[in-house]
Length: 200
Image 1: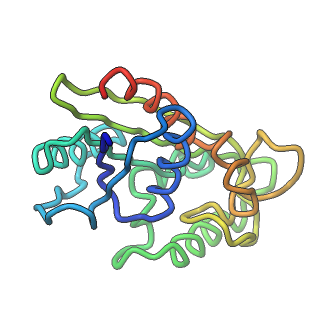
Image 2: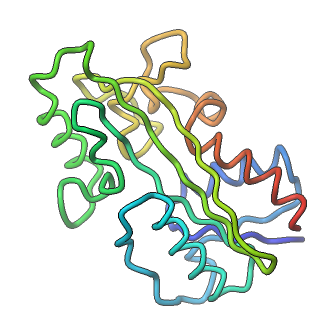
């Protein structure tokens, strides 16, 4: 059974890739960082999502020899000139904390009117394999609300309402299938999955 490696310990990211691969490339097994021998993980010090994703995918391929994927993603808020961007996961400092990141973002937008709270999520997925490497990007547009809602997401999902829904639910209030169909990572991973068929 062919395997692909996703350079992540995030169970929800691994689950997203498994669900999307099952639709396009059934029979492919996804393994994560906890499933392979430990190796020195690169410091994500690039200035772009592409740079960080490539760092992680290249390190994963060098360490495992498997077709290796890595995602770098974040939220870009219009009123903050595109920030937190690549700093999304560590916006409130160390150690990383979704709760603190969300609270800080809400504080920074407290005086921003509702019609200026636009934002979008970006996901860049890099793939490295014996034949080369490629990068795909997905985006999900919407706006930041004023409170935390929902329990089924991670990161900034609890305060982000996507444009591509018929109601006012946050990403964290959508079902997994609904989120996969419109999310930044879902879009990027579906394109990756179709290309993985050729590689595998």
